[in-house]
Amino acid sequence: MNTHEWQPCSIDTGDLNLAGDALQQQWDTLHLGTPEAFSQNIAVQDSWRHYHLGEFAQACEKGLAAGGAGVVPAAFAATIYAQYLEQDDKRRASLFKQVMKLCEEAEDAGVVSANLHYIHAVAMGRYSQSISIIEALAQGFGGRMKEQLQKCLKLAPKHPEGHATFAGWHAGISDQAGALMGRMLYGATQDEAHKHYELGVAHAPQAVVPRIEFARGLEVMYGEKEADVRVHLNHALQLTAVDAMQRLDQQAAREHLARLPA
Image (tube, rainbow, N blue to C red; front, top):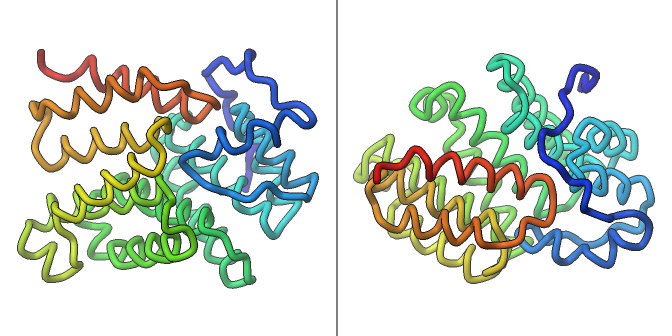
């Protein structure tokens, strides 16, 4: 994965101190939404440290060099970089495809990680959005994404962002395929979307991402005038964003709020 042309993160993280033991001391807070055991591998720690500081190229490079569990922070870094910072549509789509391949290879090599399945599903979801949901369903991404999220939640039943992403899967397919076909072909329903959004928030009330994903899903299902879209976005903006990704997500939430009708 070529990171040499990646742009630096636009979010200021100068106030974050994750040097030395500070990373482990803040680990549980950093991973409220994405539960992950703290690695004893120094190189993997460094990859996660760079990721949380928004140094996505370094995170990806160090994670790939470490191999094994290091693939997980590398995949997180590439996915978040592509989602928020890559400006070229073709390069963005290519990055999501590279993450998918990376995750597939890691799973085949025996890496066992709920977050590996989670970020694999996220990359598939973002790639699907880049080519249109209907085209993505025709290419089989609906079933593949569901499989990865089920694997994530089997390994980590209380994974907040896993639940939020599975909720988004239900919401998106119900919207694009229609309620009847979504249920018949994929088992996707709006009721399941609500259930998983509620679980995501319940398992990590102080986590930023599940709230923002809840708002996005409500808008997909019911439109931008749905009152709770604003409720969840505002709630997410009141929470403390403890790393670069969460700050990028809050920035997107502020822009989302500004676009909503008064």
